[in-house]
Length: 133
Image (tube, rainbow, N blue to C red; front, side, top):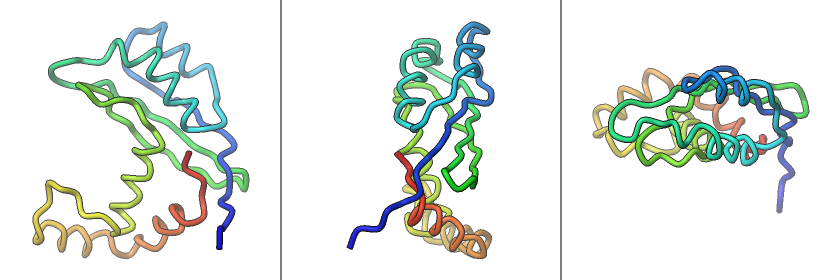
């Protein structure tokens, strides 16, 4: 059985680091998918990222068709290819307690789960009912 997920209505880049021209260009647009917003980052911000150390911070916001919203930050640097959908899915999967990050050992993960477990159902709901494309 396939469940239809609530589609994304808008994606915004709220703030970013980089040249003023790039940031103003990205902040002046809205997209209707994370894929389109990621392609804009790939085209305009990717060439300006630090290659060896550091990153460009990109603050973004999503709104789904029912009005629910999400705001996050994507760190663009090194060889990290901008993929906002993967970033949101990965972040939500950790906070839904579905995926343990590779850098955490069992004790770290247990502490994380104890600290964030009360919101895990909210993150699971986002993953299960919201389009993240």
